[in-house]
Amino acid sequence: MQVLSTPRWFTGSDGKAHVVYEVQLTNAFPSSATLVELSAVDAASGATLADLRGSALAAAVSPSGAAPSG
Image (cartoon, rainbow, N blue to C red; front, top):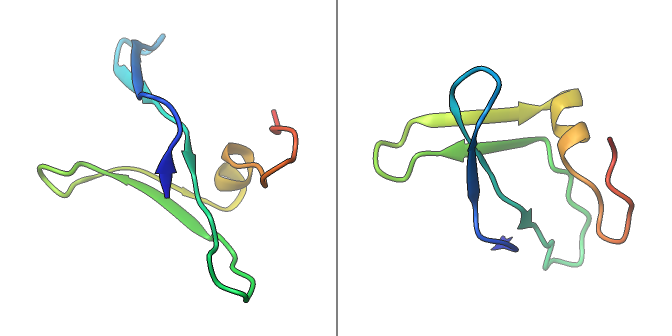
């Protein structure tokens, strides 16, 4: 995993602080891999901040070289 840009925060319409960041996941093995879950975890507390699966995960990721969905 590689972070591609500096994380940025903003205040959302819900009045809460949100963080936006972009990461690149690379499969370095010769066999295929399927991403089924992606979690953001607070390094200090270990608390899960966000958990993406299913259609939410599919909407948030794009294969390398593919146009982002949206």
